[in-house]
Length: 257
Image 1 (cartoon, rainbow, N blue to C red):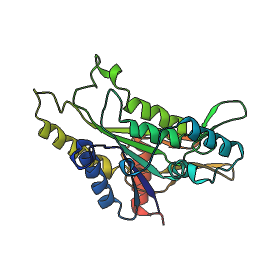
Image 2: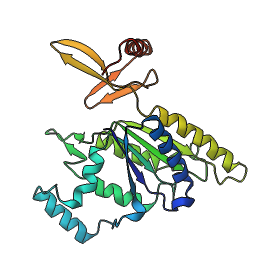
Image 3: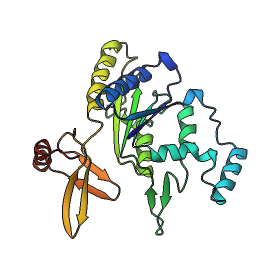
Image 4: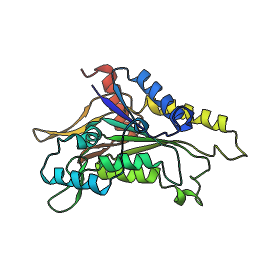
């Protein structure tokens, strides 16, 4: 069973506009994919302490002793094993609330979520291929003169790539506190985008196989839009529109088990 890990850093709880947007996505996702499991983590309900000197000393000792099965690393293992990841956090002070940073520091563990090759190159170890970041912003930070101020989504995207999660998506409603805008209308538009995004969050899974010296494409699941970049660990395939449509038509005639 495919698992979607939902990480909620919406510190205003039920009053959070970000949580409303994320919940809309999750509801639609569950409707589209009823056989998938959604695991929810509400960071506000967890006892997540900052990485203090004492905490880091204990963690480093466990890591040196190769005791990576210790409960201290449970969050990292959970993150590394998820098939898809959704994070929800409001735009605070140009990034996101501190509780999410504490969580990400707990998740970032060498040899669990990332590692290094013998040549010293960074190596992502997470199973997930897709990461959706849901946020709401009072101002507009997607314009050329303001985009450089936005460090929340960009940070999560960069960290995802460090973990090996190549497909990053952003679901955002912004300008909600601009007195010139209608915040209800903007949030409603974002809700519609959430519905659309949830329906295609499960894309075609296409793996380029090498079997008996023959190159083959294997279609694992329907539902993808054409022209999509698909990543599968070290194998990266760019499927052109005509090839993807041909695969889809073939699947309709002869669905895979």
